[in-house]
Amino acid sequence: MIFIGADHRGFKQKEELIKFFTENLIEHFDCGNTEYNSEDDFPIFAFAVTKQVLTSGNSFIESKNGDWGLLICGSGEGMSIAANKAKGIRAALCSDIESAKQSRQENNCNVLVLNEKHGLQDILDIINAFRYTDFSADEKYARRVGMIEEYENL
Image (cartoon, rainbow, N blue to C red; front, side, top):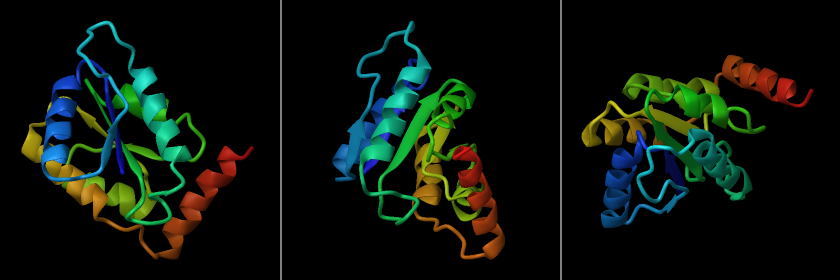
């Protein structure tokens, strides 16, 4: 399941993705915004997505078929900051296929963050790179992710 959320600046892309997901039978859940509102606050949607990812019980971190989050806003920075406040979330702002792959391979991220500047095909390419890349079995990446998890528990 893909939990998707966007503020007003990512609303157009989110709506295009929801249409695409629906037409292609890709399981998703819209965490908002459900209507364009130029006065909305991005943290609301970041928190809604991260809550769903954390409570779904089917962690993308544990299984590549698991649930994960997708956030879209103007720059992507605000959503990344807000999402990463939730313990157990590793959100990555990705601007291309390589950064999406790397965020999964090296950091085992479970939330993908995009900015509004991408067209639909670029977004789909980045999503697929993120979605179909596994966490590396390399010990150094596991050690580094473990250090992050330890720090979260302080």
